[in-house]
Length: 212
Image 1: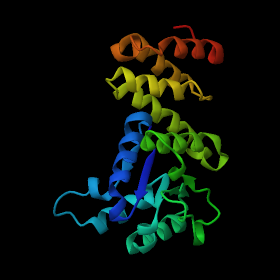
Image 2: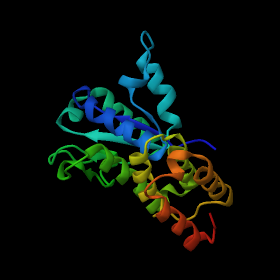
Image 3: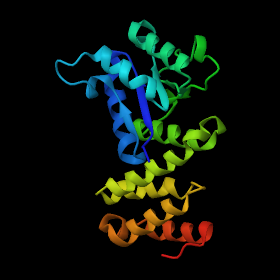
């Protein structure tokens, strides 16, 4: 099963926040996130890379700001996403920037109103929005698969606490996914010895009747 494919659209001036959101989506939720400044190799035509990557994305994440408004490529990427039928999750980086045009009906997550670790909060909002809205129903199974991949790939106890805190809010894991989680509990040290493991075990027993 494939991980969720996310495409982050941004103006050059906002590449730093795009970079940390990409990292949070990948580490905390197991997404495969594309950011052209990071994922285009030297001497590679970035336009061709965008044309290859955007149409197959599961979710399009425009970082709306005063700079985004002036970016030709960002507006073209947004149009491509709409035409391709890709679900759009706009993130507002400032108060004055909100979804316009064909994405005006989309909820713009007001990241500018948040404090603390903005990248983690943005990534968590995206993940929970996917699992909480029926318009994303076609990718629910892969979304659950992605967070299991994040738990499997992590070798940090603190990160695993964060992953588990979200995982215990999720319903609908398949039998094969539950089997994978149990395997990680028994065989991966950073999961087995994680401080948050009791809450995960209790969740599995209470929600699915799975003993670990």
